[in-house]
Amino acid sequence: MADIKMKPVFYILFTFIATVSYGQISETDSDKADLLIDNFQNHVDSTNQLTNGAKIFYISDTLFRGMILTLKNGDKIELDLRYKDNFRGYTELGADFENYVLVKHRGDGSGNPEELRVINKKTGKDKWLGNYPFYIDKENEIGVYEAYTDLSSNIVVHDFSTDETETYPTPDTKCICCECFEITQFDNESFTIKFNDPEDKGTELKVKRKK
Picture 1 (cartoon, rainbow, N blue to C red):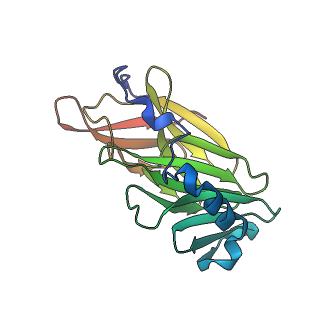
Picture 2: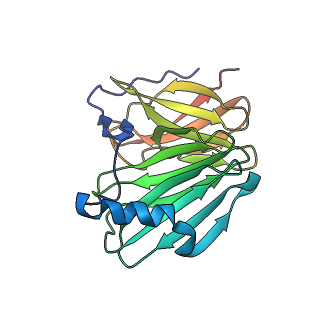
Picture 3: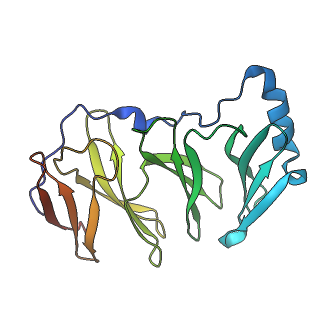
C-alpha cells in the first residue's frame, strides 16, 4: 500500500457528533411539532418513492417544514424538522441503495461539512458514520468517505451491498473541512486519491485495496 501519513490530531471532531440538531424547535412549539409528525400524511407537499418499499415525504404546515422517511416494515423516521423560515444548513436525500438510505446533512455555519447518516431499510437502524462520501459508485453501492476517531480520521471504503468496510489512514493535507479529497481511479484492486498536501501542492496517491 502507498505510504500515507496520518493527519494531525487537531481534527475538528464536531463532525462525528450524532446529536446535531438541524432544526431547533423551541419548547413552546414542541407539541405543535409532535402533532405535525404524528399527522404528517395530512401535510404532504411531495413524495419520493425509494427502492425496497421506502418512501420520503416532504411535509409542511403554517409553522414547520420537514422530511419523513417511512420503511416497508412501518417504521417512521424523522429526517428533518425546522421552522419554515430556517434556511441554515440543510438535509437532503443522498443515495438510495437496495438496503440503505444515505442522507446528507449540513449544519448551521459555512465551515461545517456535509455529514453522512445511514438508515437500514429493513431494521430502521440509524447511524452517523462521518463525512458524506466524496465518491459514490451507485451501480455497485460503494461509497468512500472520511470517518473520525478520537485522535484522527480514516478513509473508509464502504460496500453497502454487503455492509463491509475497508479503512485506510487519511492522507496528510492542509484541508480540515470540506471537499478535501477526490477519487480519480477506483476498481477492485486499488484506488487513487487526489488532495492538496500541506504545501498546497496537488498530490495523487494510489492505494492498494485490502482484500
